[in-house]
Image (tube, rainbow, N blue to C red):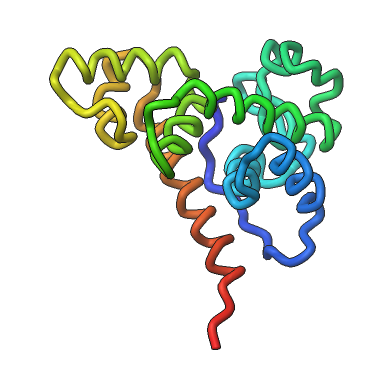
Amino acid sequence: MCGGGYPIIPGNKNFKYDDLIRHYATRFSIPFHIAKALIGQESTFNANAKSPCGAMGLCQLMPATARELNVLDPSDPEENIRGGMQHLAAMYSIFKLEKGIERWLFALGAYNCGAGYVIKAQRIAKLNNARTDKWYHIVLFLKETGCDYRQTSEYVARILWQMFNYTCDDIKIK
């Protein structure tokens, strides 16, 4: 993905795509708040969004990725969300040694810049005796892989912020 803008965050209550997001997030074992934050970051919830590099739809799927995921119409919200959640789940399944939220950070980073870059950064980190299981250690080595490490780092940080925002909206304070 090549996005990375500053998204508009709609309120959490009964948002237009929440039912679809919840359905496919559940189907692919992705926490709802991560799924919703990713979509907010990728497209600001615009089903017709197109990036300068050709990514399309709510989850900003690249044409080749959409084809691999059998997404025939990337502008169709349901198809795009299904494909995006399937792709995120695939990224999550790659990073088995990372634990807790770290594993999700790696998956989100891979969703954005590609798993190959993240894995290469882990190899470089290992060669430098650095931790390979902490996202913000790996970001330091992403710049040596050729990926836009600043954009990817900001992308993951924005999703974390949105995820926290959505979670806080659900907390009931008495």
